[in-house]
Figure 1: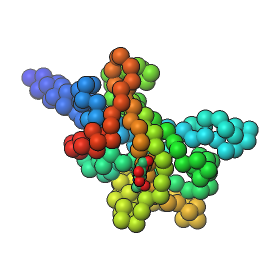
Figure 2 (figure 1 turned 120 degrees about the vertical axis):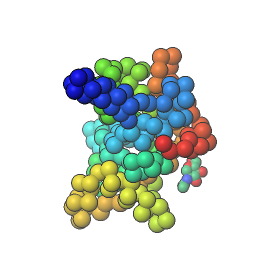
Figure 3 (figure 1 turned 180 degrees about the horizontal axis):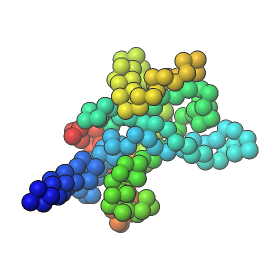
Figure 4 (figure 1 turned 135 degrees about the vertical axis):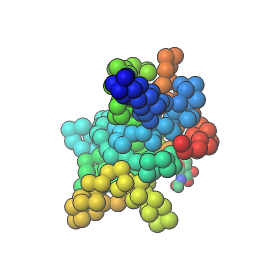
Length: 193
Ligand SMILES: *[C@@H]1O[C@H](CO)[C@@H](O)[C@H](O)[C@H]1NC(C)=O
């Protein structure tokens, strides 16, 4: 009897656990915001300024946060240093692409969705990286440091600064049938969960 109740409890916990319930795939703006909030890191592509790759696409990974858990803003914040190879590219050309996938969470693994399956939902954001202005620094810091506690110990002589992606284009792949686009208006109208 006891173990039956325990199994039932486990079943309830796993069916209602945050990571296994995602927005419906046709709620594309909601899906985009969900992915951006759920992922702690993403892949950032720049146009390389570094020989021998100068002029070629260059992808790298960065820690990202759009807000403390449950308080997502939709704005991807990053903590950057001019010493970093991709950040040096951004100084020449601030246009970047940021890809975030539920493969970075336990969702795809639990569902046994391959990272390349359209069911392993992802968002690709295109835009310009910019320094966060004074009024927004406190939020950017809380967003990043709450989700990446190690950041507070990163070497103080590296010139770290808070940056955000000023998004211009939002592309979502969350189901079969090809990529979908979301407008900025739709994206920022979504209420955080
Ligand atoms: C973000 O980009 C848009 C369009 O490219 C521009 O109009 C806007 O001023 C930018 N936002 C900030 C805060 O710089």
